[in-house]
Length: 277
Image (cartoon, rainbow, N blue to C red; front, side):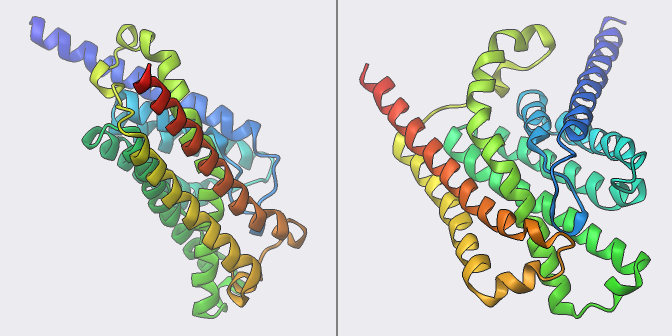
């Protein structure tokens, strides 16, 4: 009986944590929904820090399910103002959020170091947003006649544009802000049902962290120069509904690259000084 009671309490706690994650994420989506995005689809979502945190601290399932539910609730609220479509959310946002944040929690649990976290975050966000981008293009190709007539290369370019724009708006928040957030809440984790081993992420060697951030920063910088100075950039953003935001969208790739590089440099210096003290 005691074992059954413990299991029931554990399941209840998991549901509570998932609900908290979903609710906070939904609010964050609604609060930042006013920021315009190209094509008029998707949102500027610094709030992804919330499901990322729950994925790392409380496990991939809680983070993934919370992200999926929170995404749908947030999109449903925005649909009341004709800012999105609940069916589109189910096709694109929900699966993309679930896979992305489940994968993030899983990868970090296997390699609990901040250098691995940087790479894992980038990989998870790329995969999650790629799924969402595929869902968006597939959905609109079915329901909007003009999208169905687009050439294959334009559809592929649009998927790439969606994916890396969303990634570029997420990594500057998830990667630099997660370490201080984890440190701040660590004393409270055990009382909220968290497994302390989930938040014992090693700083490791400063060079390892610096290498990880350089890799991510260079990828974003290369993407910036491709979309800014080559015909590929014009193809990727040629179908944007809000042409006036195109320059800002492209520039955000460079901003994200600079933020990640700055984080890696500062964190490496911090690790070096900590080791020397």
